Image 1: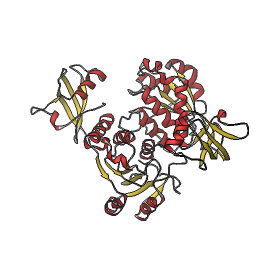
Image 2 (image 1 turned 180 degrees about the horizontal axis):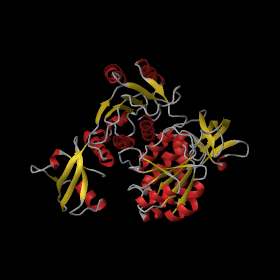
Image 3 (image 1 turned 180 degrees about the vertical axis):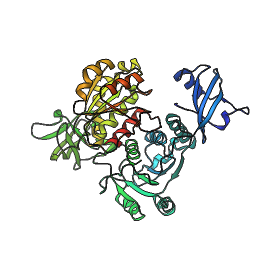
Image 4 (image 1 turned 135 degrees about the vertical axis):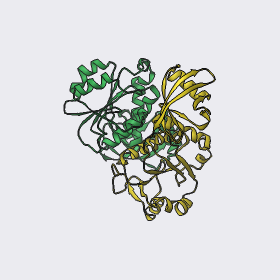
Amino acid sequence: MNLILLNPNDLTDDGHVCITDPRRLTHLRDVHRSSPGDLLTVGVQGGNMGKALLKELTAERAYFQVESLNEPPPAPLPVHLVLALPRPRMLARTLEHVTALGVKEITLLHTKRVEKSYWQSPELRPDKIYQHLILGLEQARDTQLPSVILSKGFRPFLQQQLPALLNQRRGLVAHPGMANACPRGISDPTLLLVGPEGGFIAWEVEQLMLAGCEGMHLGPRILRVETAVTALLSRLF
Amino acid sequence: MNLILLNPNDLTDDGHVCITDPRRLTHLRDVHRSSPGDLLTVGVQGGNMGKALLKELTAERAYFQVESLNEPPPAPLPVHLVLALPRPRMLARTLEHVTALGVKEITLLHTKRVEKSYWQSPELRPDKIYQHLILGLEQARDTQLPSVILSKGFRPFLQQQLPALLNQRRGLVAHPGMANACPRGISDPTLLLVGPEGGFIAWEVEQLMLAGCEGMHLGPRILRVETAVTALLSRLF
């Protein structure tokens, strides 16, 4: 928690901050080892960041006086990430990595090699997803929550969502064996598509190419989804 | 396990392969769902990769006939990674990520902000480290085992190891707030130094600069060590 991320409920009417949830209280006490008088980094969800003075820390609440709130959050990455739904534990970690890296738009997609049971995982509950996004923001010192869309069919995605997503975006499909290497240091608005652990099937890659995407690869090594996504985002932007 | 990594004990005198350890047997049966007649990707530790025909799979052993062994492993990254010792669970995952990405030389370093108790963790036992390196190689389809050196003092590292490590290598210290951004797509032999969760202290950065390293940063976001290391390696090489 490199940033105390505040939601509207944490703000009192007179411009103070009052935190009461056990997770952040425990973190302030046991990890930050904070005590009254400490100046801590805060940020308002969807808004600016700044400093707040800790006035009181008890088992029930942390009470702050806001000193400044004029630093904008870091710039987002110009990317919409379409990720074949990974297995639940990998999903949790990947959501934290990509949120910390600055991704703001995420679509989780069903493809042929995604196990259908993954769509039943409790990790896909909105509150669980929200929790991982918050951890990513707190880690990276960011306030802008990503949006996560679940797209449970490949054909409907192809026909109903992909054309709009490719409007004004460069579509890049990460897939082993493609002719071109992953581009470096681009700034174009991008739609980045990453397949599941076993990869997209040939037909899926073909359809994505027909829709206007370019294929690219990260080299001969086969990486886990969470490693691959971080490596792709870092090389691209 | 995208590659069945063979150690010398797995090779029989007549050029066959016999695997008897429960981990790989379970993986072959439950994840690969292999059966006799399957052609699988194998590689000899430190040597070439190729294909082997599964002849027999029982609860006690998997018996293969080697069909080919003439593909060299993928090229290593030209980097020696010096990593401030992360907390044990993060270490385990980071070793797998960086091995999969092709790092072959790793030094785990003590710095001021590394908790001393981490050096007592069972994750630092040679057999545990070896296990994570093997998982990284099996994931990425590689056969060349990285070396891992434990360097338990910053001053001795600075005086006794760093000068030799910087001989013919470009030293790069990843640290927030440095003037230059992380370079992209270099091919120089590199010594990459990455601090602990709270960063190097100012004195440590100063000493590394005096020894001839360059500072560089990955942007304003604070990343977890495992995310940062993957992002750095992918952007650099």
